[in-house]
Image (tube, rainbow over all chains, first blue to last red; front, side, top):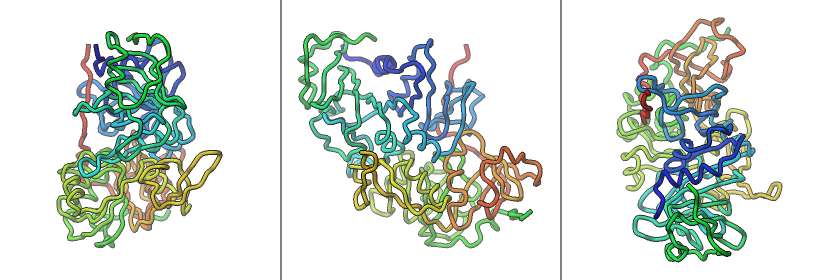
Length: 218
Length: 233
């Protein structure tokens, strides 16, 4: 069965390692924070200027001056810090942030990502995504495998305006975990109960399939 | 002590004229100079080029200036929260330059720091790079981005003194700290204007030299865009 958004977040949470600084994008990536193992030390960076983000505040304790990049009210934790926007992207460009998890509209087999514009229809802007994907060493995309029209978002070539080139390392969807290697998308895992054939049929790009493909453990 | 204090928001915005380029601090609605924006809405100033990470929401922040069609061009990184903005942009009434957020911040900082241009990897290989010089450094491609040139910077701080020294609170520091001193004239509106000598020099985020006019805002609504809470249990 295809994974729920929460399950995609749970699977990605396994990629978060001890002593990682992590930047989470809006949408499914935000959920990842809920599922990170409690026995490891992880700090979340939000590009609007906070490191060491805590959970949402209790009702009545919201502070308009303490928000995340999704404009949601948040809290800080012991050891947190605030900084300005230029400094924030400085730590991103200088690769102090170990892992970036973000959503996408399309990903291509050479690791290109598109997630900020549908010409003539939707232009919300790239926010910090272009800076993040241009600099981060480890980028994981969390998204649905197909769009609302049923078309694959895993492509040979992106059709939408790009956010970054050759940067995505891994993609986790409701159907599969894919790694972007030199030759293209390598199928690493499949969602419980989802067949390799179903994944192939749902994917426009060619998949590199070697041996038995294990089911994801969520 | 060189005083920067002005007595009202009206005095603070003196000299702002139609056609000028103005930087506005804030991220979303967090840390926006809401008193100065409200004062500008009550003028007939138009054709502004605004440099701001976001465009406010329909009825608050820069959204108010958009509603009154006082803005000719926006330079922003993310404008998804404002439907009127999207309408004006798609209909061609509003000129929009979308720029990566880190590049936007650095273009402010470069202006503040007297650096005319810099290279960044952000946007290489995308439409953002079109028409810009590209160069390889350390095996990686970068594009050249230029410092902003603005007539005014308008920022909001938590506390300030008459010398123009500023202290921000929480994530309201955001673009405010990058824009202070980046325009020819910087206006700072603060929640609390304190006498000189009150603020600890060790705690100052922006030294007064970057600020030309400072005043205490009359009223701060500090609207929350996404009120998210967790249950007590």
